[in-house]
Length: 359
Image (cartoon, rainbow, N blue to C red; front, side, top):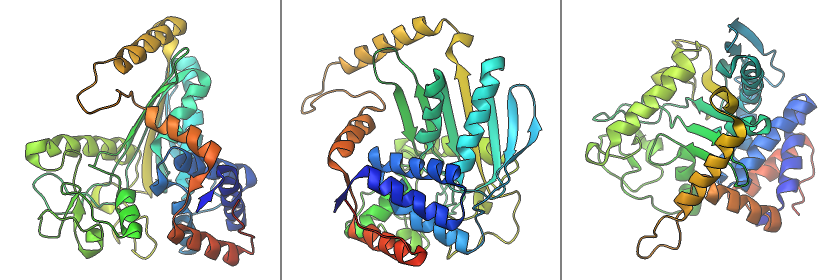
């Protein structure tokens, strides 16, 4: 079924309000999930909504967090998210980072005591509103094995950067430090399809095409897959995200990160508070005149788009092109939603006394 993005956003907001979120925070959270759906990251959009509700029901998520800065310098801060939605705590952290960047040239905020924050690109792109470069990281449920291991010690730990241009659309990089995000496995499960070799391994460290392998003790692989294809580099990137997001902020790291799924209990011996994020904002004119920089960004983007195309390929893309084009298409024609997700949304509507009548 295809549903209008505006309807999905409004329904999502109503669910968050029913959960107890203040309306302004519910609006931010709904917008974050809606942007994921619009950008084609279906695994992190409305499909995640019921997961947040289950965490709230387990009292692992606070719908009315008292977020506060617990450490601060002119250009940095640590924000305690009070177990709030990461969809809310990360935007607040980015707001603080941008305010600091206005006076210090750049602002950096580490977040602890938070939860899953949706797509990293949403938070990085907030900086574009202030003509700044945005940066966002988060650690996540330990589902990923370090190179040469079968232990689940890291999350998919995404990295996002958003860079403004002049007349060209901004360049937006938003990627997991694994071969794919965990949500891609969930999508394949709902479709009943196999996954390619190199995405994950079974509990003994063997290659597999079974997208349910994580439920059987398997693990995901770092970006690159095995050692011969550069998996050690993905491992290093995931480690960097984990340390910046959690060791720096005071959140849980490595195997102590609490799982997103409510049916699994958090580790009994936490080393920190909740999940951690790390966001930053740079003022472009802290380095060179903004107009000059953006003119050269236009030139960079046009140059790379004009690169010679390999045989069998249609065109060369720059980071952010597929998501921007998907957003345009889905704003016009609606968001395709799988039946399993629709069933979840209907259950949420019944739970909270809402109408779910897709348009």
